[in-house]
Length: 327
Image (cartoon, rainbow, N blue to C red):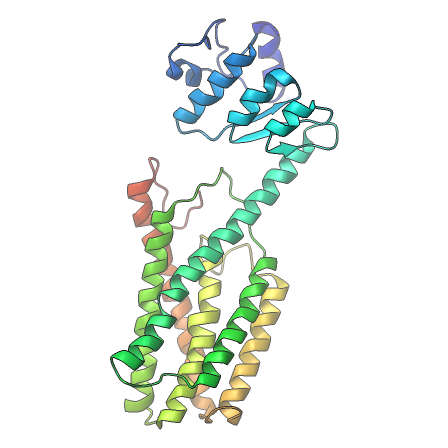
Protein backbone atom coordinates (compact mmCIF):
# COMPACT_ATOMS: atom_id res chain seq x y z
CA UNK A 1 0.00 0.00 0.00
CA UNK A 2 1.47 3.33 -1.06
CA UNK A 3 1.63 6.46 1.05
CA UNK A 4 -1.26 8.19 -0.75
CA UNK A 5 -3.49 5.14 -0.45
CA UNK A 6 -2.59 4.68 3.22
CA UNK A 7 -3.38 8.35 3.91
CA UNK A 8 -6.80 8.01 2.25
CA UNK A 9 -7.66 4.81 4.14
CA UNK A 10 -6.49 6.32 7.46
CA UNK A 11 -8.62 9.41 6.87
CA UNK A 12 -11.71 7.20 6.56
CA UNK A 13 -11.27 6.08 10.17
CA UNK A 14 -10.30 9.48 11.52
CA UNK A 15 -6.50 9.17 11.46
CA UNK A 16 -5.16 12.35 9.91
CA UNK A 17 -1.58 12.38 11.20
CA UNK A 18 1.66 12.47 9.28
CA UNK A 19 2.59 9.60 6.95
CA UNK A 20 5.99 8.04 7.66
CA UNK A 21 8.50 8.16 4.79
CA UNK A 22 9.64 4.87 3.31
CA UNK A 23 12.40 3.25 5.34
CA UNK A 24 11.43 4.85 8.66
CA UNK A 25 11.09 1.45 10.29
CA UNK A 26 14.29 -0.08 9.01
CA UNK A 27 16.18 -2.19 11.53
CA UNK A 28 18.66 -0.12 13.50
CA UNK A 29 16.63 3.04 13.10
CA UNK A 30 15.76 5.46 15.87
CA UNK A 31 12.74 4.18 17.88
CA UNK A 32 11.64 7.77 18.53
CA UNK A 33 11.06 8.25 14.81
CA UNK A 34 8.49 5.45 14.83
CA UNK A 35 6.48 7.18 17.55
CA UNK A 36 6.49 10.45 15.64
CA UNK A 37 4.25 9.28 12.76
CA UNK A 38 0.62 8.11 12.73
CA UNK A 39 0.38 6.35 9.35
CA UNK A 40 2.78 3.78 7.90
CA UNK A 41 2.72 2.30 4.39
CA UNK A 42 4.66 -0.48 2.67
CA UNK A 43 5.65 -2.13 5.95
CA UNK A 44 7.60 -5.40 5.88
CA UNK A 45 7.07 -8.13 8.53
CA UNK A 46 10.21 -7.28 10.49
CA UNK A 47 9.25 -3.61 10.43
CA UNK A 48 5.91 -4.41 12.06
CA UNK A 49 7.81 -5.96 14.94
CA UNK A 50 10.12 -2.94 15.16
CA UNK A 51 7.16 -0.53 15.19
CA UNK A 52 5.40 -2.40 18.01
CA UNK A 53 8.58 -2.62 20.07
CA UNK A 54 9.26 1.10 19.59
CA UNK A 55 5.76 2.06 20.70
CA UNK A 56 6.04 -0.18 23.76
CA UNK A 57 9.42 1.32 24.67
CA UNK A 58 7.73 4.73 24.53
CA UNK A 59 5.19 3.60 27.15
CA UNK A 60 2.26 2.73 24.88
CA UNK A 61 0.07 -0.35 25.09
CA UNK A 62 -0.07 -1.81 21.59
CA UNK A 63 -2.68 -3.93 19.86
CA UNK A 64 -2.33 -5.47 16.40
CA UNK A 65 -4.47 -7.48 14.00
CA UNK A 66 -3.08 -9.97 11.49
CA UNK A 67 -3.90 -13.11 9.57
CA UNK A 68 -0.72 -14.44 7.97
CA UNK A 69 2.43 -16.29 8.91
CA UNK A 70 4.48 -13.13 8.48
CA UNK A 71 2.35 -11.38 11.12
CA UNK A 72 3.15 -13.95 13.82
CA UNK A 73 6.24 -12.24 15.35
CA UNK A 74 4.42 -8.91 15.64
CA UNK A 75 1.27 -10.56 17.02
CA UNK A 76 3.36 -12.25 19.70
CA UNK A 77 5.17 -9.01 20.61
CA UNK A 78 2.01 -6.88 20.84
CA UNK A 79 0.28 -6.45 24.18
CA UNK A 80 -2.92 -7.59 22.47
CA UNK A 81 -2.30 -9.66 19.34
CA UNK A 82 -5.56 -10.28 17.49
CA UNK A 83 -5.86 -12.94 14.79
CA UNK A 84 -8.80 -12.20 12.50
CA UNK A 85 -11.29 -14.80 11.26
CA UNK A 86 -9.69 -17.09 8.69
CA UNK A 87 -6.16 -16.45 9.94
CA UNK A 88 -3.49 -19.10 9.59
CA UNK A 89 -2.83 -21.49 12.44
CA UNK A 90 0.55 -19.86 13.05
CA UNK A 91 -1.08 -16.43 13.45
CA UNK A 92 -3.74 -17.85 15.77
CA UNK A 93 -1.16 -19.54 18.00
CA UNK A 94 0.86 -16.33 18.25
CA UNK A 95 -2.15 -14.12 19.04
CA UNK A 96 -3.75 -13.56 22.43
CA UNK A 97 -7.23 -13.14 20.92
CA UNK A 98 -8.76 -14.95 17.95
CA UNK A 99 -11.86 -13.56 16.22
CA UNK A 100 -14.41 -16.14 15.10
CA UNK A 101 -16.52 -13.91 12.85
CA UNK A 102 -15.54 -11.76 9.84
CA UNK A 103 -14.89 -8.10 10.59
CA UNK A 104 -13.39 -6.28 13.55
CA UNK A 105 -16.55 -5.51 15.53
CA UNK A 106 -15.85 -8.24 18.08
CA UNK A 107 -12.71 -6.40 19.17
CA UNK A 108 -14.82 -3.66 20.75
CA UNK A 109 -16.85 -6.25 22.66
CA UNK A 110 -13.68 -8.00 23.83
CA UNK A 111 -12.05 -4.77 25.03
CA UNK A 112 -15.23 -3.67 26.81
CA UNK A 113 -15.59 -7.03 28.56
CA UNK A 114 -11.94 -7.27 29.58
CA UNK A 115 -11.90 -3.74 30.99
CA UNK A 116 -15.01 -4.48 33.03
CA UNK A 117 -13.33 -7.60 34.41
CA UNK A 118 -10.27 -5.55 35.30
CA UNK A 119 -12.38 -3.04 37.22
CA UNK A 120 -13.95 -5.86 39.25
CA UNK A 121 -10.51 -7.33 39.96
CA UNK A 122 -9.16 -3.95 40.98
CA UNK A 123 -12.11 -3.32 43.31
CA UNK A 124 -11.73 -6.78 44.85
CA UNK A 125 -8.00 -6.25 45.49
CA UNK A 126 -8.64 -2.85 47.09
CA UNK A 127 -11.40 -4.36 49.22
CA UNK A 128 -9.17 -7.20 50.41
CA UNK A 129 -6.30 -4.83 51.24
CA UNK A 130 -8.50 -2.58 53.36
CA UNK A 131 -10.35 -5.43 55.10
CA UNK A 132 -7.35 -7.66 55.80
CA UNK A 133 -5.41 -4.78 57.30
CA UNK A 134 -8.23 -3.79 59.63
CA UNK A 135 -10.56 -6.51 60.95
CA UNK A 136 -7.93 -9.23 61.69
CA UNK A 137 -5.67 -6.61 63.29
CA UNK A 138 -8.55 -5.37 65.43
CA UNK A 139 -9.52 -8.83 66.63
CA UNK A 140 -5.90 -9.82 67.33
CA UNK A 141 -5.18 -6.55 69.14
CA UNK A 142 -8.13 -7.15 71.44
CA UNK A 143 -6.60 -10.42 72.60
CA UNK A 144 -2.92 -9.44 72.63
CA UNK A 145 -3.13 -5.85 73.87
CA UNK A 146 -6.47 -5.52 75.71
CA UNK A 147 -6.76 -9.18 76.78
CA UNK A 148 -10.37 -9.17 75.57
CA UNK A 149 -12.22 -11.31 73.08
CA UNK A 150 -13.88 -8.82 70.75
CA UNK A 151 -16.20 -11.50 69.36
CA UNK A 152 -17.38 -14.92 70.44
CA UNK A 153 -16.29 -17.92 68.33
CA UNK A 154 -19.83 -18.19 66.92
CA UNK A 155 -19.81 -14.51 65.94
CA UNK A 156 -16.48 -14.96 64.16
CA UNK A 157 -17.98 -17.81 62.13
CA UNK A 158 -21.04 -15.68 61.29
CA UNK A 159 -18.77 -12.79 60.36
CA UNK A 160 -16.93 -14.98 57.86
CA UNK A 161 -20.06 -16.52 56.37
CA UNK A 162 -22.11 -13.35 56.04
CA UNK A 163 -19.15 -11.32 54.81
CA UNK A 164 -18.37 -13.80 52.04
CA UNK A 165 -22.05 -14.00 51.10
CA UNK A 166 -22.20 -10.34 50.12
CA UNK A 167 -18.66 -10.21 48.76
CA UNK A 168 -19.60 -12.83 46.16
CA UNK A 169 -22.34 -10.53 44.84
CA UNK A 170 -19.61 -8.07 43.78
CA UNK A 171 -18.89 -10.40 40.84
CA UNK A 172 -22.27 -9.36 39.40
CA UNK A 173 -21.92 -5.69 40.27
CA UNK A 174 -22.20 -3.00 37.60
CA UNK A 175 -18.90 -1.44 36.55
CA UNK A 176 -17.85 1.07 33.91
CA UNK A 177 -14.94 0.24 31.58
CA UNK A 178 -12.10 2.73 31.65
CA UNK A 179 -11.57 5.07 28.71
CA UNK A 180 -7.89 4.13 28.40
CA UNK A 181 -5.93 0.86 28.72
CA UNK A 182 -5.56 -0.29 32.32
CA UNK A 183 -2.36 -1.05 34.16
CA UNK A 184 -1.76 -2.46 37.62
CA UNK A 185 -0.59 0.49 39.71
CA UNK A 186 0.02 -1.04 43.11
CA UNK A 187 1.20 2.20 44.72
CA UNK A 188 -2.20 3.97 44.59
CA UNK A 189 -3.99 0.73 45.51
CA UNK A 190 -1.82 0.15 48.57
CA UNK A 191 -2.07 3.80 49.64
CA UNK A 192 -5.86 3.82 49.37
CA UNK A 193 -6.21 0.39 50.99
CA UNK A 194 -3.93 1.24 53.91
CA UNK A 195 -5.70 4.55 54.48
CA UNK A 196 -9.13 2.92 54.48
CA UNK A 197 -7.84 0.22 56.83
CA UNK A 198 -6.51 2.84 59.25
CA UNK A 199 -9.86 4.67 59.26
CA UNK A 200 -11.77 1.43 59.75
CA UNK A 201 -9.45 0.34 62.53
CA UNK A 202 -9.91 3.67 64.32
CA UNK A 203 -13.69 3.31 64.13
CA UNK A 204 -13.50 -0.31 65.32
CA UNK A 205 -11.75 0.74 68.51
CA UNK A 206 -14.07 3.75 68.87
CA UNK A 207 -17.13 1.49 68.81
CA UNK A 208 -15.50 -0.81 71.36
CA UNK A 209 -14.65 2.10 73.66
CA UNK A 210 -18.09 3.74 73.32
CA UNK A 211 -19.88 0.47 74.04
CA UNK A 212 -18.40 0.18 77.51
CA UNK A 213 -17.65 3.77 78.52
CA UNK A 214 -20.52 5.67 76.85
CA UNK A 215 -23.35 3.17 76.50
CA UNK A 216 -22.37 1.09 79.57
CA UNK A 217 -22.93 -2.26 77.87
CA UNK A 218 -21.79 -5.47 79.47
CA UNK A 219 -19.06 -7.54 77.72
CA UNK A 220 -21.58 -9.77 75.90
CA UNK A 221 -23.56 -6.80 74.58
CA UNK A 222 -20.31 -5.09 73.59
CA UNK A 223 -19.46 -8.11 71.45
CA UNK A 224 -22.87 -7.89 69.79
CA UNK A 225 -22.43 -4.20 68.97
CA UNK A 226 -18.94 -4.84 67.60
CA UNK A 227 -20.27 -7.75 65.53
CA UNK A 228 -22.97 -5.54 63.99
CA UNK A 229 -20.45 -2.81 63.20
CA UNK A 230 -17.93 -5.18 61.63
CA UNK A 231 -20.60 -6.66 59.38
CA UNK A 232 -22.34 -3.45 58.31
CA UNK A 233 -19.62 -0.82 58.63
CA UNK A 234 -16.20 -2.40 58.17
CA UNK A 235 -17.66 -4.96 55.75
CA UNK A 236 -20.67 -3.70 53.82
CA UNK A 237 -19.76 -0.02 53.70
CA UNK A 238 -16.22 -0.85 52.62
CA UNK A 239 -17.56 -2.74 49.61
CA UNK A 240 -19.46 0.32 48.43
CA UNK A 241 -16.44 2.57 48.96
CA UNK A 242 -14.02 0.33 47.06
CA UNK A 243 -16.31 -0.72 44.19
CA UNK A 244 -15.36 2.26 42.01
CA UNK A 245 -12.63 4.82 41.42
CA UNK A 246 -14.92 7.80 41.89
CA UNK A 247 -17.37 8.69 44.64
CA UNK A 248 -19.74 5.95 45.77
CA UNK A 249 -22.86 7.91 44.74
CA UNK A 250 -21.71 8.28 41.13
CA UNK A 251 -22.41 6.00 38.19
CA UNK A 252 -22.23 3.12 37.69
CA UNK A 253 -24.72 2.43 40.44
CA UNK A 254 -24.57 -0.85 42.41
CA UNK A 255 -26.10 -3.88 40.71
CA UNK A 256 -29.48 -5.24 41.74
CA UNK A 257 -28.00 -8.44 43.18
CA UNK A 258 -25.49 -6.44 45.23
CA UNK A 259 -28.21 -4.20 46.67
CA UNK A 260 -30.45 -7.17 47.44
CA UNK A 261 -27.63 -8.99 49.23
CA UNK A 262 -26.92 -5.87 51.27
CA UNK A 263 -30.56 -5.41 52.24
CA UNK A 264 -30.94 -9.03 53.31
CA UNK A 265 -27.75 -8.97 55.35
CA UNK A 266 -28.53 -5.68 57.12
CA UNK A 267 -32.01 -6.89 58.04
CA UNK A 268 -30.73 -10.28 59.21
CA UNK A 269 -27.87 -8.93 61.34
CA UNK A 270 -30.09 -6.22 62.86
CA UNK A 271 -32.65 -8.88 63.75
CA UNK A 272 -30.01 -11.09 65.36
CA UNK A 273 -28.60 -8.18 67.38
CA UNK A 274 -31.87 -6.70 68.61
CA UNK A 275 -33.70 -9.98 69.27
CA UNK A 276 -30.73 -11.59 70.96
CA UNK A 277 -30.59 -14.63 68.69
CA UNK A 278 -27.20 -16.39 68.95
CA UNK A 279 -25.84 -13.40 70.90
CA UNK A 280 -26.71 -10.94 73.66
CA UNK A 281 -29.41 -8.40 72.66
CA UNK A 282 -28.70 -4.68 72.32
CA UNK A 283 -31.25 -1.81 72.20
CA UNK A 284 -32.60 -1.01 68.69
CA UNK A 285 -31.60 2.62 69.28
CA UNK A 286 -27.94 1.62 69.31
CA UNK A 287 -28.41 -0.29 66.03
CA UNK A 288 -29.87 2.87 64.52
CA UNK A 289 -26.88 4.83 65.79
CA UNK A 290 -24.53 2.35 64.14
CA UNK A 291 -26.36 2.84 60.83
CA UNK A 292 -25.86 6.60 61.11
CA UNK A 293 -22.16 5.95 61.78
CA UNK A 294 -22.04 3.80 58.65
CA UNK A 295 -23.34 6.69 56.54
CA UNK A 296 -20.73 9.02 58.03
CA UNK A 297 -18.06 6.39 57.37
CA UNK A 298 -19.15 6.10 53.72
CA UNK A 299 -18.59 9.79 53.03
CA UNK A 300 -15.38 10.04 55.05
CA UNK A 301 -13.82 6.88 53.61
CA UNK A 302 -14.77 7.88 50.07
CA UNK A 303 -13.06 11.26 50.37
CA UNK A 304 -10.02 9.57 51.91
CA UNK A 305 -9.86 7.02 49.09
CA UNK A 306 -10.02 9.71 46.38
CA UNK A 307 -7.42 11.87 48.11
CA UNK A 308 -4.90 9.09 48.82
CA UNK A 309 -5.23 7.63 45.32
CA UNK A 310 -4.62 11.03 43.77
CA UNK A 311 -1.58 11.71 45.94
CA UNK A 312 -0.06 8.31 45.13
CA UNK A 313 -0.56 8.85 41.39
CA UNK A 314 1.51 12.03 41.49
CA UNK A 315 4.58 9.89 42.09
CA UNK A 316 3.62 6.95 39.87
CA UNK A 317 2.05 8.53 36.80
CA UNK A 318 3.80 10.79 34.26
CA UNK A 319 0.48 12.53 33.57
CA UNK A 320 -1.28 13.01 36.93
CA UNK A 321 -5.05 13.10 37.04
CA UNK A 322 -7.25 15.23 39.26
CA UNK A 323 -9.06 13.79 42.29
CA UNK A 324 -12.11 11.79 41.27
CA UNK A 325 -11.03 11.55 37.63
CA UNK A 326 -10.76 8.08 36.09
CA UNK A 327 -7.78 6.96 34.12
